[in-house]
Amino acid sequence: MGPGDDAGIFRYKNILLVETVDVITPIVDDPYTFGAICAANSVSDVYAMGGTPLTALAILGFASCDFSSPVIKHLLKGCIDKLGEAGACLIGGHSIEDNEFKFGLAVTGAVDKKTILRVAGACPKDVLILTKPLGTGILTSAAKRGKLKKAALNKVIASMLQLNKTASKAAVLSGARAATDVTGFGLLGHGLNMAKSSTVDLVISYDKVPLMNGVRKYAASGTVPKGAQRNLEFCSKDVTFPEDFPKEAQLILSDPQTSGGLLIALPPRGMKKFDAFAKKEKMPYWLIGEVARGDGKIIVK
Ligand code: CO
Ligand code: CO
Image (cartoon, rainbow, N blue to C red; front, side, top):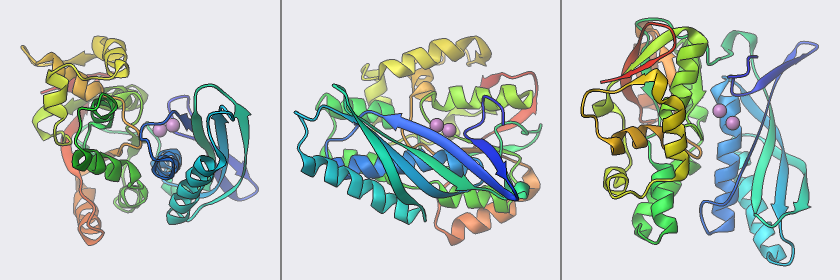
């Protein structure tokens, strides 16, 4: 695979193994929930490649004097339960003394040669589909500053806990040409990766991009993670915004996501199948734009 792909693929005899690793720092207080979010986030790269997760190895960094064993137990329980939902199992891992708490997984999956989804391959006229609303970075920052109500935080958590399993199946079934998961580089960062790898432009309609409740309000009041600003700086030379497009909207499009949804480029003829499967599985999705001829840029409308 290329450097922009979500995972590596290794052929062993006639099996194609999909391999990826992701490590994150806590974004919620409850260890069980954090373990589960970590698992959903780590298996997401396998789903983004059109694969099925099989096994995982845990990577844990913690200051043993600060964290009692029940915390670790709950963390692993959350992780194992979520992996179970994905049909994968935790088969081992490694921990290291670390002042900053970290947790992540190296995940191995398998993929069928015919269903590999790569970040490259999007073609002009393909529709762009996003399967989760944006805002986990902005809203978890608000929560860290004590500004987010419990009920609102629970909605963000529910979204992060959602596996990209159904989204991946929908993409594979409907003949998607390219896919990637929207994570740390935000929609613009991951979108640009798709645009550049596919040598096309992505035309995104801001009005159609789904946002979590409260994202606009917090972004406007400056509650934005540093990562969003960095992402925006990194992307801005390849992104065109409408005139007078508000800074907060630019930052929302750059907001780093944890366990974000899939961004899928689908030929219009695949829409019917995609929609039928999504409806059957009660999976929400949003058409946020389309692919155009170009050389690796994003045009926001
Ligand atoms: Co990814
Ligand atoms: Co990743």
